[in-house]
Length: 338
Ligand SMILES: N[C@@H](CCC(=O)N[C@@H](CS)C(=O)NCC(=O)O)C(=O)O
Image (cartoon, rainbow, N blue to C red; front, top):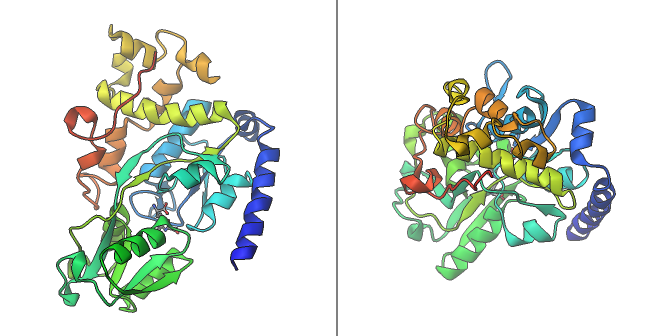
């Protein structure tokens, strides 16, 4: 099995290097829409609503890229990918950008032919249990059966943590997200471990009685989640990187989808540069000068997207915490657009 994966990865790397020849921006423009890799359906981050429209924090990043490139946030399509499929899809050119709760690690950022342009959600790995289990701390999990998804960083983190804490556990692992959720919901395992944001999403959107479950207090790792692009296309890397930076800068500068038109009259030079009133940032990216204006107007700033999808105005109600701006005690720090 290992051998087969290795071979597939090598083929994908060769394909990726062939692909790097054509500029991703040209390919995207010619096609008329950007293609983002997302989850198969993870409420709050990337999931279809009742009308089949994909919504979420990661979908908003994808839409923002579309707005930056085309001036139209609707010019995107998403390819649903499970944890295992996501890197091959990016390497092979099936998607232009992976916008899907993916932890930035050194190995992923170097050895897979892909690269991380930034972090759009700071997270950590945690545990979800049924209250019936009567466990209050992760330290009490000795002997537990633990549900996880194949191809996630969660598998290795769990193994490291259990070894360090002298905890024995039986992994119950599946390829498909639905299989893991169903196994946990039917009691086939005592614990579900993945990113805390994922646990919050699963508890609210996938379990029939969310109040029967709780997330344990411990986080056992750092899981900085963010988009990935292929190595070898600096312009596309910069477009994705600065799209995220524009979302963050907009929040820092108090620019929202509601007030951005009025703010075109602002005399603040930082606002003038971000909104393309003072020209330059668009040209640097190979985009229209209104690239950031368009994404702020059509999708909103980072905080608007956070609140609507995963924060206080969403069913998940995840606190801003580390995902607040640095000026409010969080880690998000918009790099200067100048
Ligand atoms: N952040 C971790 C975990 C990400 C991950 O794939 N989590 C699973 C949750 S169990 C998921 O999102 N599954 C959704 C799917 O496969 O559609 C990673 O990058 O490996």
